[in-house]
Length: 148
Image (tube, rainbow, N blue to C red):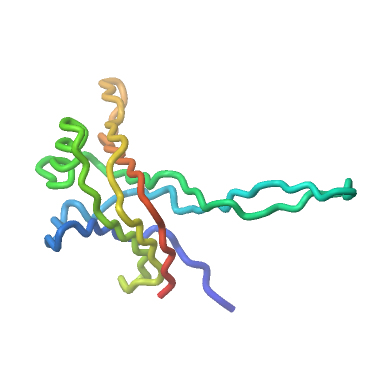
């Protein structure tokens, strides 16, 4: 019987221009947006009133959303800030890898030509202690699911 896969060990790798990633920019506490949907178009057939044919039209996806505790001095933060401040966007491929207990890759999702569309920081609240969380949202051209 197969053992259920635990989704709490993962790494996020930004692959931009052959630069070695900063270790600060590999660790995230949460990743969401790992999905694709086939959009369909209904086609009614003449004389057929019981159902309509569903034809595939295109593949759509939401944005990749990454969350982590606020990091000072992160090159990724500097890149996000530059893009959103100057409205000049440089794309990057992003690899999200699910890891086993031993740290070995089990599955991966490759997001091609990703670029930032939103960057937010959690509320600051003097009445409740808690981590300051940065949320980074990226649009991308295509997602490729990889099974190791």
